Image (tube, rainbow, N blue to C red):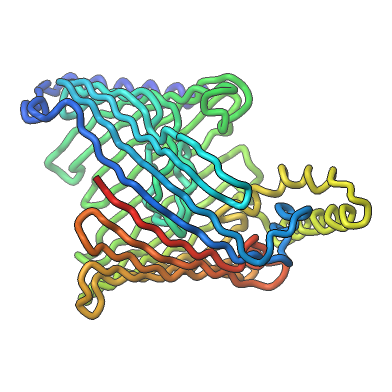
Length: 418
C-alpha cells in the first residue's frame, strides 16, 4: 500500500507540474450548443431458447419445473442518454427502462448505466464524479485489464453496460516527439454495502488509475488498482496499426495475491480488413482465474449428487445451495482458462445496401466445445436497425458449452434510434 501511495503521489505531482505550463482556455463553440441534448433508442427484442435438458445448468434452474423444450421472452427497452452542458460544467445520465415477459411472467427494471457530473476547466483537464463506464482495455471480446468495468458478453461486446461509482480526473498533454500524447487518469472508488459492493464487503476506498501514451503510433495504457481489503492488480495494454488494414492489440493483467497459476491473464488479438470489406477479428484469451477440467468436473459432480438427492427424497436444500455457488460458473462468459474468438463480418455483400452479415465463434481449447453465432443486421431506413441472430452450443457432456442451459438461442431485435 505504501508503494501504491508513492506511485499515486508521483502521478499527481507530475500532473500538477504539467498543468503549470498549460494555458487555460474555453471552447466558445461548446457554449453555443444547446444546454440539454438527448438521444437513445426504443427496442423490441424477442428471444427463444432451445433448452438442453441433459445439462447441469438445466438441472440447477429447472429441477422442479418442466418448461418444455423451448421457452421464450419478449423484451421492450427504452435507453435514454441525457446531457446537460453549461460552460465548464456538464451532467450526463444514461438510463435503461426494461419491460420483459419471460416464463416467470412480467417484470420491469430501470437501470442507470451512467450518471455523473463533469467539470472541464480546459481542453486538457476534466474532473468527473458519479457512476461511469471507464472502458479499460483494447480487447474486442474480453478485457482482462478492465478492473473497473463489468465483463463483456463476447457474443454482443458492444452492448451497453452499467458503470461503477468513482471519482476521477483526466489530464491530457500533446507533444511533438516520439511521445505524441500523454494522459493521466487517477481514480478513487468507494466501497460499502450499498455502493460498489462488487469490490468487497468491507467499507473502504480503493485507489487506482490509468496512464495512456501514444508512443510512436502505438497506443499503450498502464493500469493499477489497490485497496486495504482488496487484492492489488496491475495491467498493461497496447494497440498498433501495422498497416492501414491490419491492427494488433493485447493486454495483460497481474494480481500478485493470487496463486502462482492464477496471477496472470492476457489477451492477444488481430483485426484485419480485406479489400472487399470483410473484417476478421481474432483473439486468444488466457484466463488465469479460469477453472481447470478437474475443478469444473467437481462442480458437475456436486450438481449430479444434489439433483439425485432431490429426485429420491424431494429435498431441495443441496441444489438450492448450489444455485448460489455454481450458477456464476454457468453465467460466466469465460469460466475456464483458454479460449479462441473469431468474428467475420462483411459490409454490404453482393452490393446489398445496408446489410451487415457476420459469424462469430468461441472455442474452448481445453475441452474443445464451442459456440457459433451467425448474425444479420439490416438498416432499411435511417435510424431503424433490424437484427437476427442465433447462437448454437456444441460439446460433449461435461464440457463448457455442452453444459450450457440452452442448445440454441434465437434472437430478433428491432431498434429505432432518436
